[in-house]
Image (cartoon, rainbow, N blue to C red; front, side, top):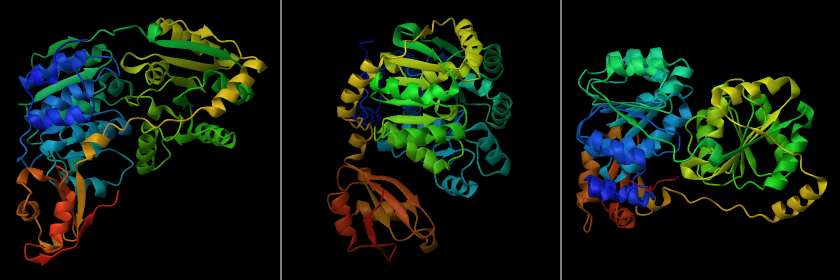
Length: 478
């Protein structure tokens, strides 16, 4: 690991404060190599494995360089899945928190009206899936005329999921003069062709994995009939005693059935699949990240790009039909240099799929031994005593000194961000730097107050008007 420090990269105090509170210690290899290049306005094409810290590698320098007063969108990030788009948006939001960076995520299966409302505000960064992004550009709802940075994340996944043509269509709508940054775990021919066509003398960065998949992740398979799977899963949980596990099924029906069986057995688990409302999917992922339950039973929507700390086990309850999905699922464990286990259930008829996965990716997946009754009994007693510890909340530290305040006036009362900022800044002991992101809706507004001064502002607003109008201010509900 490099001895370079984030302070050595010439970053502002606002960015340094945010990344320190988020728990970033020293730059990872991809961050060390990519951040200075983006700061110097170079197109970058980076090949980097999942879990290497690449989101921060582009979010930190872009957040540093953005013009905060520009009303039009300056950054467009394209991601293959809704979950990844939301995660990148949250990362940008947290890294740019003290610079008052506004970010929006746009994707399908969420009402367009919600996204249109958000885009009417001043937004610096938009993270979107290709389909919805192109749709909003075509409608004229997403103004891309001032885009300065285009990030194509998980480019090989865009290709696998059939989005590359849409990505090309979006690029054609963007200004010619911009920085283009492409990140991918692999570099197929089509991705290389994309970069040669649309990037300006990109600097190639390749981050070698510190250890091989085989060294980091112990891979095992069990051959059994379909109706024996749950019984074996129950046994393995007792013996393996996972701290945090993702269990993958092929269909949402299988996910719901398995989650129901596991809950009936008393396991701390929840389901995630494409049939759920997006708000429920987002909420479920956040609860899993916080360690509120142990087992996430999911379809492949949770296999790509999602970063959950300390997943000790990935269990393929159903072997994936797409060979690449095995790699993506497995990549949820053994992240950032830690070790993990990948366990796969295979029916006799599916065994050839396992062999094809081994051959394609040059893996050695070892046949596992079914635990004895004695091992299961001893393991169950220990597992039942196991206490689930909540995970460290990365954003807790950054949110500690920030208070979000609800104000009972908005656009219909002709309230503007400057009116709210001016009123709060006039309070004794409060500076303009203490006023964070302001979000104005039709009938109400939200404002973030920084520096632990939320209570001072709330108390003072009881006796103040905004633009001559009496308002009610209270701490925003979560």
